[in-house]
Amino acid sequence: MSKIKSLLKNLHPDQWKRKPWANPTLIAASRVRPDKLKSFIVQELRSEAGKPAVQSEWPTITEVAKRLGENKGTVSRLIRKGRLKDNGLKNRQRRIDPASVLEYCKAKGITYNQTR
Image (cartoon, rainbow, N blue to C red; front, side, top):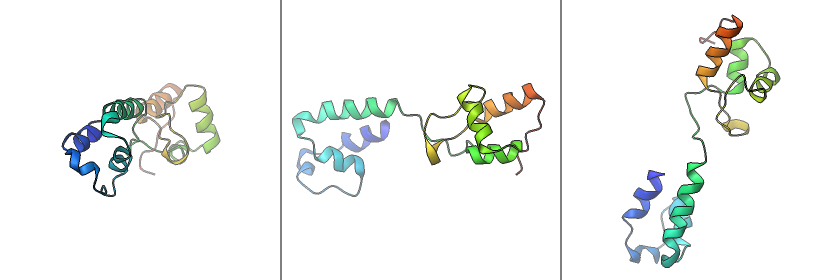
């Protein structure tokens, strides 16, 4: 959210005429007329606010499955049933909250192997 603000805050109106750098936010913003820029920024900020961030330190389904000694389908089922929490994204961006994994293991009496 602050990334878009910081990128667009310092742009001079003359910069809209120049070709923007290889930044997707600036490219998208450069296609917006200057009088519509404020509504564009508000729309971008609202769309980013609803997206959970990809947590690189959170393990993937595959990693959790290996550490629990289960298969990926079992871990996905635990997420669907609400026993594990994820970041809400799909496919390769999907990550599991490590705190929910530890709580699940504690409740089930399972040893969570963090070294694998």
